[in-house]
Amino acid sequence: MIDAAEFKGHIVRLDHTAHAVRSIEAAAKLYRDVLGGVRVYGRSIDDEGFRFEQFQYPNGSKIELLEPLREDSFIASFLRSRGEGLHHLTFMVVGLEELVAKLKRGGHRIVGEDYRDPAWREAFISPRSAHGTIVQLAESLPAQG
Image 1 (cartoon, one colour):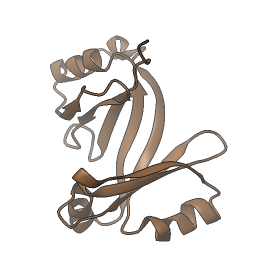
Image 2: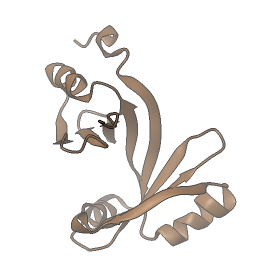
Image 3: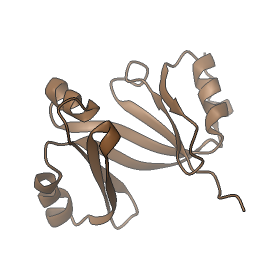
């Protein structure tokens, strides 16, 4: 049984929802042009075969669009099996490694842990442990120096 009190203080905010799409440009016609999102960031991750763009809305919330660059990418695989739609939710956290350890002790399946880059450390709660949706937990440590 998980004690909710032991998770207090770890979750900072829901940062963004990410949607897998076949074409960012086509999807931007809704998320940017109709719904008024302002592009704040985007880039290609060539070694993983996808690109993304983030759009921000007046209250600070963000939607991230994910587009495959190759047919062997995880986004292309997702689109083949599930079609366009919600891919993951990203929560910014503090104490990521401690939080992950608590989740594991509580029986949650954690996949894709990466603590190498202090600017963006991440771990994912498997959809099997998150009612069908990938949950990304991310932490950005202060710059040293």
